[in-house]
Image 1 (cartoon, helix red, strand yellow):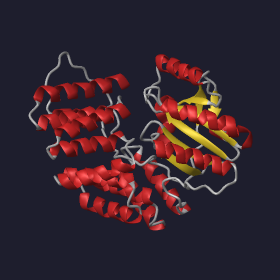
Image 2: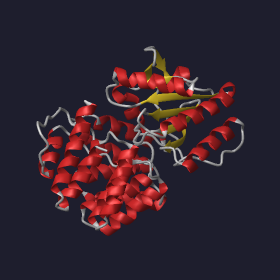
Image 3: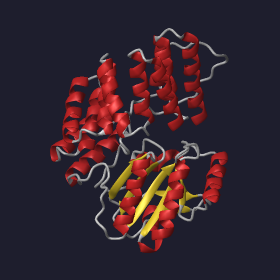
Image 4: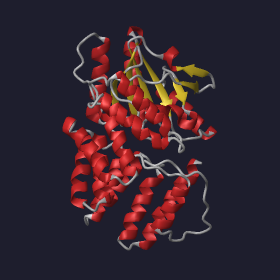
Length: 379
């Protein structure tokens, strides 16, 4: 979803804020759209993960290269407010106990918020004690690792090999995916051929990865972001099967209003991978922007059947269902999105936008106010 605005805003009382004004406030601060991802927006299976350095819960610096396992390392991005985080941390502890002497380890990275408060750090330590975690738990102050990996949903688990190359990725912690993750780790450590291969099984061409990484680096600054398109095109030319590069190029086009060019890239992705959640969600959002509500509902529902762990996709689906006339379904999906990530202001912005469209002004104002409250809480 979008980044948070650059400055705080205050409201002395609850008043109706029109959509145009609300979005205008956000755009002034550089709010950018980042559509849903299957698990990661900067990495996929076959790419090398960054060598991150973060502080442990006692304040000491811990470097990934010094902590990783000889064979496999499960990097778990989690939060104290995510209901599924405790489940994945506990499951990883069991796998760690079983395989830590055979080249496997776990690194838990807490990504609760941009600026970790003392209260949050206390909650992290309480979770560590409650679950009796024996593997390293790191604090992602500033969300540096979260952004370097391109994480979208919490929890998310990324399994890398001894060379830090991504072997498996899982967004959220769905039942089936959780079992595939555990089986993949067990089979790999025990020397059996893994049945599960992650979201994407091929390694992109090195030249394509270099161009893709250059594009992502340029996108970090508003002064160089326009040059990212050239490098993403180079990545696609170097490896037409590098789907993450195509999706990123489609997003550049969509943000510029060139939805036809974005759709062309997304169609190429779905021809190669019909179950690609990123492409389905992005395509659904474009259909929604173009007023093709029925098409949007179909695309977004297909994406949710594949993965219901992404608040962005769930939010888009809520808006699509509401515009198609099913407000009960829309409200249910907005609630589901808020359960996945209760701190995301965009969920409440979209909900307010839909309620405003339906003429339910007091409810719309309440949702807009919730969005602003979430923004202020994150600063």
